[in-house]
Length: 550
Ligand code: FE
Ligand code: CA
Image 1 (cartoon, rainbow, N blue to C red):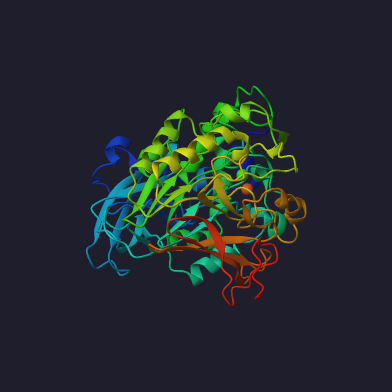
Image 2 (spheres, rainbow, N blue to C red; image 1 turned 60 degrees about the horizontal axis):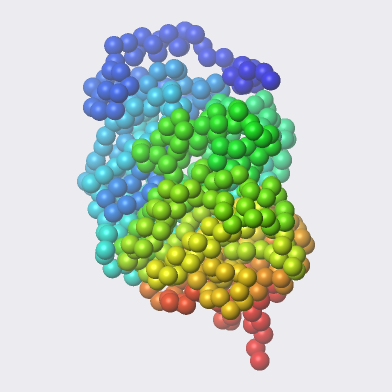
């Protein structure tokens, strides 16, 4: 395999100009070391080799007094090191009440260092709860686009309502992000939650797949190195609609498998077992993920871990337990893909002991009306055969014992309105979650909405023909659709959780229209979604509930 750095330089016909590099070194001679750059910086930042904010800006993990801001200095997205010199650069962030940056202006300076691909993370503290803010960055005398964000309401405060969207699975080469364009144009959201497959690791075809844009060099290879993961995130972040969704709303992100490798488990790669090199590959992928996401500084990965699981609280209305169902899991105990159930399903962990303890602690201590498990893979059971012996082992069906233990603990603790939101399947499922699927009379413990993909698998029939015939084996599945792309909109108050499936007409055009394919309500104290049969809701034919007037 060629050195990816050489390939990149060749590919764009542009090798770092040595004279410019030396000029840089001179300009920064005598500046403070990296650690000191984290504090006040007296030296003026030198000019950059080009406009540095080509990947946009983002904010994330809103708390009542804190929000994390992100950008990355990338003057030339597909050049070596993004066109940046191998030196730290001072970046100033600004936050104000208004877009003109005149009201309550706050600012600070942080270092963008080459070791972290000149990414910028700033945890801005001292903010007011439940307030909108504007932010921007300044580097080399150049201002970034102005981002918009919103803090969470005060802890323990009464919050009447909350509106958020969730999304997953955005394979760049499978189509355009029409779903994000519509989300930005049509919605005013408190939060966007991304549930994984933010990037895909596989080869991008030379013609850019359904995007019909020429891609070259390292992008045509599966990601394995830090450089190639960085470049893959760069490719995705060059999309204007994805940038705009980040600029407009605060996000909370978690990952699934493709941020590293399809169906990997913990430190075990999917395809070569044991795979000594996988640990390093995973570390590279985790670092690149951190470098491109609006995460807290505390998420900066060590050589062995990126601590991603955390909770976000929105007053008394909702708590989001953002989970990590990849990093600590056991290898799929009964094999990969579709397999017959085996005893390992009962004992394997998907969360790891520490995260499992954390989750149950967050649940037991919560005074929120809605308690959300925001996580990568589908929790509800999907029997693939009538006997109920054959399952997709990568989802929670491969870890069914732990699923039962979580759901029965939640039930016994009397947690208020538990709801799982998930991605991964490129399909929509609405589930009754039960601690014991073997018992038809077991109570419904929680509700699950599995959202479809933003783009992955593209337009046309995808999974409907394969999975729809299995739905009759699974009485707890309230709704299934396998053939549409979009995002999921959730509007909460203290009595009702409303879910709307926002689907786009296609992903062949970035400007495709959206429509509400179906909507659901969950009533306070009554686990399990009900399809909304009100006039105009257009209940589709695959819903289990018949909305035909009697
Ligand atoms: Fe996916
Ligand atoms: Ca996945």
